[in-house]
Length: 486
Image (cartoon, rainbow, N blue to C red; front, top):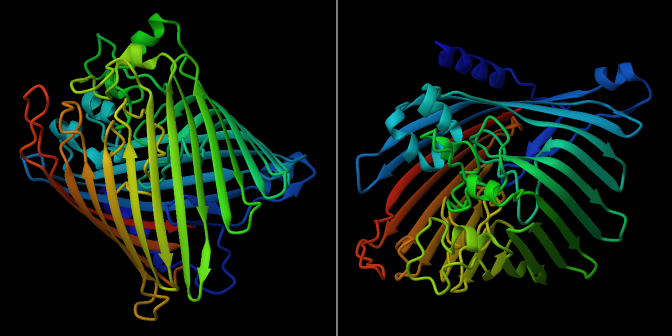
């Protein structure tokens, strides 16, 4: 009955949305589903208007997943229906407040014995709550922060999303990934932005509470404690909370990121991030736009270095605690080089991407900003294990610009992923084919739908160095998403 009521409200809201040209679009979605605010609260001079002149930003969304695992009977269909309500106060003396409440209420295959196998659909629910309380609904206060904002400065204190090359909101499901700490952005230098942050806690998309940034749950008195701390797919299972506590290590993150566009058509990003006594990172990313007649050619280069400051001795070189085939089993030093070439015309684009990780340790990046993102990472794939080589071709076509199908854009990706056959803790090779179709509606500018499909064909015969047979990574997946902002 609850689902029927929510569905009715959703349909009624969309069908009765204002469509005249005077409708104000308060916020919209960019290409990676991150919310961009088009209308912000104004400055006021008294406390009454500070609250009264604030703005509510609403979002209704549905995400559904059909998963077909070709090797067992763990197929499922599950959907999350919910959304968010974000309130931003007005600014008094350049100071404002933000609070964001998010919810996901699930329908479909709600079975406790499937909770560990939901994979990409796990972000619709909290696996710990399902396992311990059979509770499939997920509601979280993901944003709550104070902000100081001027034309060139932005300071946030509290719980908020972060958008950098090492940590992102990754808001592609029901609830964004957010952090607790202090964030500062400065635009004083010409054509330069500087972001700095000190982050103490993280709340992954499928958690209701903020938890450790780089600690895996391992409470011996709780069978499901692994789902209480950082249980992201890119988290190191050997960096457990008990081991860090024994060494009195606090998993806190310091980061600085600089973006510069001084040279025409050239964008350079530099990032340095450190988690004291554990890991640090240096990232360089550059892209250059070349205009050639009706085409735009954009080469890009990405380099990432992970420095082991003690984490390798604690957890080992492999994310899943299986160091068979690694040259130095106690080192998490890692290096990644990636490149791509974009060829863009008015209605279509072509991307050729390549990435290679050195034969050292695995990258530990459980903060939803993936090392190979934008280069070779296809839908739901993890390809930053040691000694992994990947190739990807991506094609985008805007049917609307081509005046064929109004509001329709499509994308296809094909990735070849060659993992190290000798490493027992690394998956077998695979080939990935994905399709995305996005539809926008002119009459309802704040409504869009997105259909995604992935077909993964894995190697079924890979034998690791310890003579163990690797699991076949093949599966098929279908995702359907609806978004309405108000």
